[in-house]
Image (cartoon, rainbow, N blue to C red):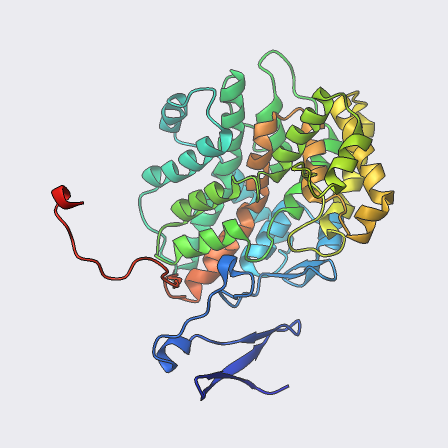
Length: 428
């Protein structure tokens, strides 16, 4: 393959370099296009064919169903690693040795205290407020309690800021849920692991002792790892573009949380359960809704099946399906909503229409099932997605700042009115 691509416009030719990634990906570098051609730009709505950066964090091949963090397969990490190991890997580039891990864990648990004045901000929200809106606001509010900007040229400053937000977010997540349920706000224990501590803070009731459930801890550990990063998706791109203005880490993360909130992104697992509830209210006939999903003239859409990026089976879904089965078996839950979910799954996996189009259950389908089985309110599902995605956002923000990337500033093709003269209001 040539090392350059040639663009011809009105008989004039322009050459642009071809770049190659380590996984044989190929890109045309058009960073000089506008200057070389005196104003010509590309138009790519949704940026589906546009690379916004060079990154060494996550590799994703949707056609082959491959997802790797820093070169490690998602299958191996989900099977063998702890979530904080994966967080360290994404942010700092390598898996930690025992000494590095112990320091990282201990520093996080040491910083897992939130200024008590944050409770006053939380109290201002009504119980009806969506937890994602609350979490985004609280994350942004942390800036007020940590006013000094991060010196990105100082490894110590960067490390302290990273540890601080990884430590405090589970507290905010737990408080957000407990506020909605009317439970007292509390902290966990420094003696617990990160994932166990999160579950403890969320679910411990004031009149009961906390009982550790290793199956739930393992399932949540896997879920957080599977969600930890996913290349340049909507929320990650948001974190990077906000951070490119040199906005602080907490402000950039708050913007990412807002982007993740949307039903086409992180809110998809909530949409799955809402769809299942609607099917139940209509009698629970899964075959009826499978037929509706195949009818092009029917507005019904089967949520949690297929994926915008993966054109084959979502590799994360294979992993989390097993965890979902283990959680349901361990808890012995009888729930008609979960029965409907299993019915849809069984039918889709053997239905020729779905198999031919590779519309398999995705990670959102199974994560929603696990969260419901754990006893999470539906509107908390995306909040848990936020917890998982946090290290990925941090890694992307850190990489962008260390590489001193320019401020993000997309172009547009203007299709509005041409120059018009102002008329006095009496003449309009």
